[in-house]
Image (spheres, rainbow, N blue to C red):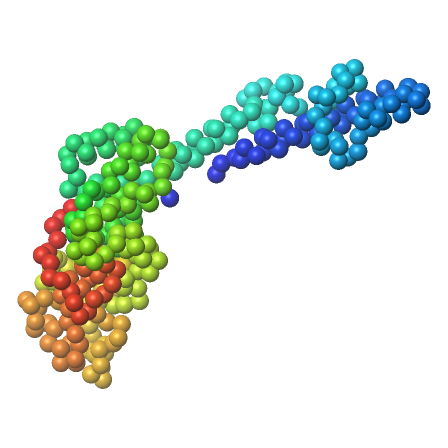
Length: 322
């Protein structure tokens, strides 16, 4: 109706690599010690001067490559490095096979993120644009939604107060230009949509709203949360459309109001009445109680601006479909 998103850290590989280096160095140090034990006291003293005996802190500062080859012995550690790993590649740990598993996890996450995307195209998009967008959707295996309810993103290049536009804003779902999906197609993974939120400067100025602000407000504080809205049969642009929009902004649409609701000649504060001139007779009981009756514009324009402007609601024609 109208008027209206885990990766295995590379650090794990770096960390394990440093562990291998530390283990190898310890083994080297032990070999050196055995070699020194066989030497005289004078040679021991010389070795001390050459840092043969290293303090614990020195072990973390010196690379094992700096020690004599004859003083080293193969590491007997159970931890194998990529160089001496004998485990079959398919069952080797991430340490043995380098960064490939991490890359695979990244790709998997990217695919998973895109798998959750369901786009809905505006009927007001250019035909060629839609054609190109659908090619990207097919290649990325992204789903095309049949309604805003099922969609995660609404794609359009201009602001038109349609049912889909209103429902998208009301639910706080990203309203993006076709450039978002185009760039996702180039990158082959999910891209944050905030830079691609639709900005129609002319319409925003005319209606007094800011699209990013309206979307954020709709997500954080739904327009009609905790309120009941009585709608009359002939309300424009249609009872079903208005009813659905009310639900989308977390209100409760009611089509009948019992006598108990109007007892003591008082209209409940949480009750909002939306009607039209054709349903004047239906509104009489509420008027007699002093209730204010509003047109659907209060809701339709309110969804766009995310404000209920009781005193000044601009008259707008019923929104077109799409």
